[in-house]
Picture 1 (cartoon, rainbow, N blue to C red):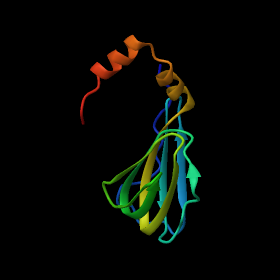
Picture 2: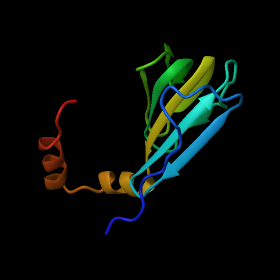
Picture 3: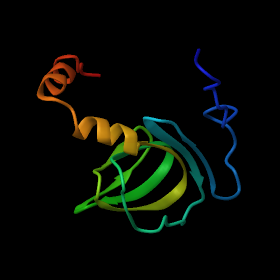
Length: 128
């Protein structure tokens, strides 16, 4: 009974670069996913993350600020942005990156776990 949940947004991971900023955003009940393709020199506006967010750099490089932390991120790097934290992304060279963030439903569920549920979630957590 699962409805359509396949959303093609890129022909291949090594598809040719697009000429302008392109964002594909998919939001479900528990997670939101964004695929960004951004030309060199583009600065995403500084913002405060409403939810916990991870940015995974697929290609290119970005200067990332999350709170007081700053780093240049390249392919395979992850930038973590906690909920309520200021962040900023500046693209150094044409970049393709994905963001994954929680949703209000998921954060409410986590924030309101019983002690037993929190312990069970901790026990079932496995390292990558």
